Amino acid sequence: MSHRRSFGFVLAAAIAFQWIGSGDLAIADDAVADSTSGGEVVEEQFVYKTITDESSGKSIELFVDWTRPAGWTAEDSRPAAVFFHGGGWTGGKPGQFASHSKELAQRGMVCFRVKYRLLDRKSKSPPDTCVENASDALRYIRAHASKFGIDPKRIASGGGSAGGHLAAYLGTMDDEVVDGVSRKPAAMLLFNPVYDNGPGGWGTARVGDAFAKYSPMHNITKDDPPSIVFLGTKDNLIPVATGERFRDKCKECGVRSELHLYEGQPHGFFNAKKTDGGGKIYRDTMEKTVAFLESLGWVD
Image 1 (cartoon, helix red, strand yellow):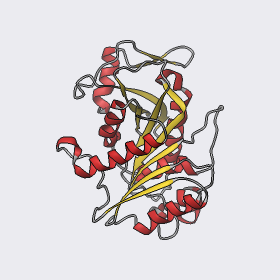
Image 2 (cartoon, rainbow, N blue to C red):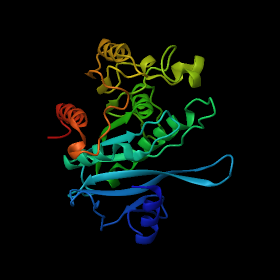
Image 3 (tube, rainbow, N blue to C red):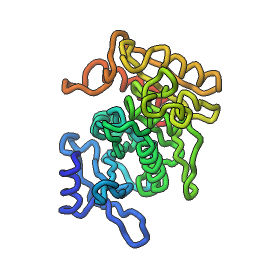
Image 4 (cartoon, rainbow, N blue to C red):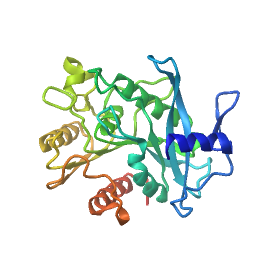
């Protein structure tokens, strides 16, 4: 769902979400079915944060697109997944995980795709705004769990590449509780995540000697959630050794972590294709994702 389409939809239809006096969210009774889903899932969009652009002074609304089963009600207590798109912290769109969201919603989950503030490609700034927005988005979703019909204790973070970094960041860094709300997920779905930002890892040009502040690889502890990781053996950003090291460090701490390697596949191999079913590799990664979630008791 594009920004333009969704923004117009929210204004014209006056459904989806709206702010009311107390600051709570009101969800419309007449949810709109996604036109491509055959009524199987429902999609809407809401604003989780409004920021001010430092250069223009204009307000910018940060959105979340969310997908839920057609039989959903706000009284439900469903498992959820919060996805962050890739793009090197400088590009990409939430729609990268639209297909994943639809399939998981068909299995009973509620899925969220976060728009976060991107970095300037020309700058060398660290991803402070990215991790801040990711943290705020997950806290917002958890704080409104009763409105979204989700279980606040069963929220997974997910993402690919730089979005995988954000998903892993939330799971491995020390929690920062704001107004009693945690940002820590209960599981991680990681698609070629750039989760080693230390010396020799990805993103060091931005994080430098402060890598321990950003790098999931360097913050694994026994209280981290279980994870499933997908990685191509020909990924030019993430060596297989990096994936193996993350898995092994998790296991040393008593944390479950699955690593699935795809022979000869490059960075971004997991994305859904336009072919029926999203393509062979996409189908395989989705089947393994579902099996992982089944093992947690989140889906049947």
